[in-house]
Length: 487
Image 1: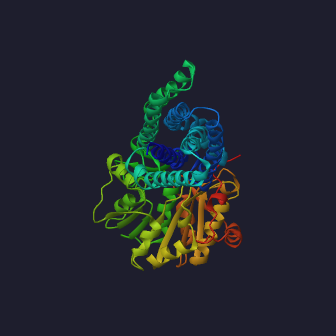
Image 2: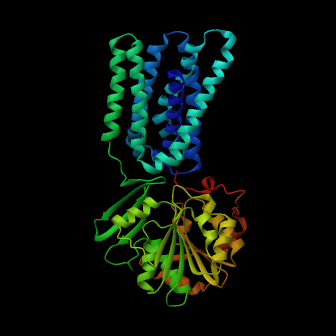
Image 3: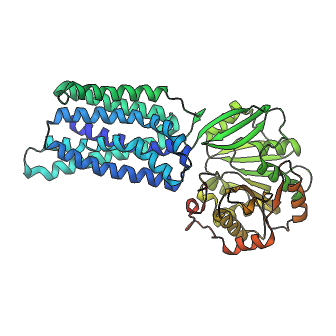
């Protein structure tokens, strides 16, 4: 029974590490396909190395001391995973996909390898004769897989949603260390005081750093590392950070104030393309809830429905950004892709898309199929405006332009004046509608914004629409199109 529990727990913690490291690394590398690939690839490589080393070790050393060492060091390494990312993340950020690979490798490769070495050692202790070797190996392989499944499901569905990642790793690593100490009491530790002190030191340092290293987050949500900071140049200004990106800005004293350039261009698009008076709007992504509050203040009587995937971000906005919901502002928690299908057709004058970041993009909100849902919800004269962050060759921006161009009759793109010739890039606002766009009024309005914008010229827009990849549910390689970093 104890042997089964050891294999089950060690395998479960391996998958806890694999899932949790994605949350740890995302603030520095983005919640991208590359980050997921790094986590899976490093974990698989470490599992293979650990299994090989564990099998070799089982043939050379006594099982109880070896298991004690593997569990204590593996648990201590689990406690160290988060501090390692928090300490190295700021230094390694900005290296593109290599950031994820390095951070994942430095933080979880060693504890995953150590814990993966446990199963072959346990199997060796249960092999009384070769005649029944197959059933023994099969049984423990099954329990190891069950442990991995439990670790995956509990972490992804329950633990990360309920607890900070630091707590998840503290409990997981602590449980493994305690199990290792049990084996140490039963069979001793590897010979030599140095080995004993080294193992206990790893656990002590890991536990201390896990608790002591300060997280940059006000809230570690299931999706983001989120925090709110005051604007030193504007006493009533507050900035919302999601991961390492400035995601939203709110002036607590003036809801009509739009700080970020792209929100100014969104406002200019709304004012220049929609008639005066209240509008019924839908917002894909809430964040700081800047634009819904701007609409309520600048166009009294307007109503906004916000589709926000992360309830913890909404709660942070309530606590720190003075968010107030009611008949004029309702929040629908959950994924926008599944929520939008429940909205009535021809029910909105305006849809605002602000769910894309500079490090990661929810690909399923970029496709032609999702754009078709937006078009269904809009009235015939309605307007869709979306914030798109891209740099370099603007392959993702071109893809979004081409995709929306297949769904809507008219498309325009707003960017910082003169920025489209620069690889630096940044925020762009894509404007789409079935009704003709008053491009002259739009150009004048964005040029008059505090941070002036300009429209992409007709030739560039035509090239994007013709050459950009049309994104579909079947093919949307957004992470490869996006250029989040400059070389």
